[in-house]
Amino acid sequence: MTSNDTPRDPHPYVGMWVTADGFIRQELLPNGRYDEARGNRQSAYTGSYTVTGNHLDYVDDTGFTATGDIRDGVLYHEHLVLYREGDEPAGRESRR
Image 1 (cartoon, rainbow, N blue to C red):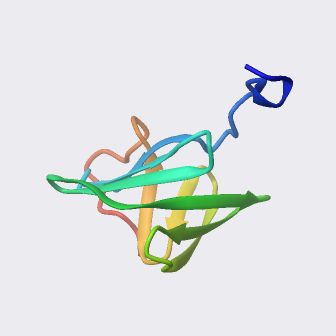
Image 2 (tube, one colour):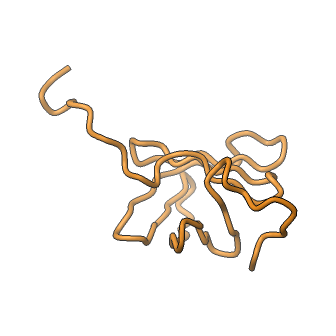
């Protein structure tokens, strides 16, 4: 490991985010990559992301771009509403 490989604390948004029904699971990895599963389809979408304040910019591996914003601990990613895994609202549909 070189000095450039020194581990840093991960960004606070790193981790698994899920829709209220658990169908979509988006993992933000500490290396600036994401991996999104949909239903039984693992790695349905993969790519990179950058964070500026509470705003996320995504570029998937095919070149498609998307954005997201974190507000009050909730990730609003285009038309999706994702919650930190374990923080999903019980018995409530996701807001649009």
